[in-house]
Length: 529
Image (cartoon, rainbow, N blue to C red; front, side, top):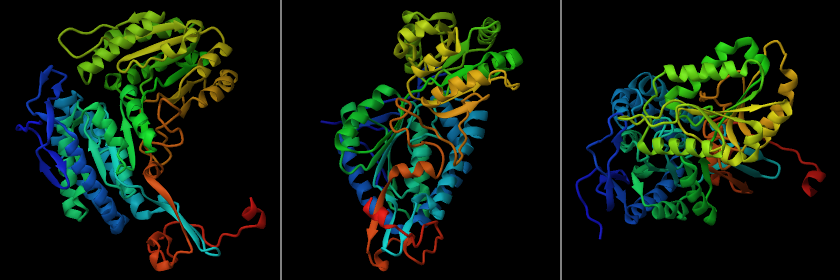
């Protein structure tokens, strides 16, 4: 039988209540190694049952309210985040060791409130729903809310990808769905504060109380049971490949859409002419990118591909020097530290040469800045192993003897979020570029030229996705509104339905002014085809 003790409460249907806890856990300050005082519950299935039922009811209520009230909530929530950013940053700093400034308060905070406001604008404007009207046949269709969405947040972006604050959350709410947030165990206190602000915005704007609900941790079996429950319409997950694939298996078994962001080594190709032109500049760009946030970005450049030339050794020496001169940052948790060490050991056991770092730093949650090297033929002998993600301040350099060999390496890559190619501004590398780019493009969701991949702009044109295992669905993005909203919607067609029974978006006198096709003309061939 579960035992209830004093601990942080879960958010169920607008009320903070004690969990039916199977056990409890504490987050740890990675900068000190000390557990933080708050205890958080590992919920039993009875908590999930309450939350699921409330979310299922809230989904129907939200659909009746329409997009304007949802947009008002998103704007109100964004305002509350901005007003409380100092408090949020202080708590997140204790749980993650990410710096208050500029990272949390000046960068990730404004990004988080900004994408909520973009989601609000998209909900009001309505074109994300792709309303299409054929008045001749009286057939109308649009994207509509799907139902309750579970969001699993990652450890590395407690604000912008958080389970009750981040991009998946904003997209799911903008589409008109309630969200069940599962906090990441690295920063449960931060997530709780976001949920408190979300509840305040819900009360201010009159949304259903269960529009946002929060759990902290579940057993693996209950996590799989949650995503497979028929009341869950879709799942958004950002995190490790192992845990994500377990959830995917459970969701796939019952046909629940699950949008995953799992792992990516983000290959960077630096062609000879680029090194010839700007060796020092490229060395500095790479150092800045790979060490930013202690390398704990999903777009961290974990794989560098070079053609052997007279500047190759100079680039490697410059990176080694930079790694030795710059202090290793604090990692998010001891599990991240252990995973990074294990990845380095896997790579070196397979034949990669350790040029620098690769060791735990005594007395802190850190690993020395790590650079590894392998030749292309050795890489091609076991490309799966050499693509082991070393999540953190580490990167593997692959050196090829010819552009054809470089293309073979690119062809052997798994799916990635990003791929970059640096080439000479003079055009000296254009021939090599034309060989590499088409191959690399098939392996990535975003192709960059002469730019490191670390930054992810919150732009309507952004694709933060890619072929598996970067994500589970290469046609979708986790960043970029309105495109990201459609993941959490269903296409509904209304055939000969009376105008008064149609959703406002599909009525002839639609007050929102959303874009649609009217008076479509079909040929006989179209009808038969």
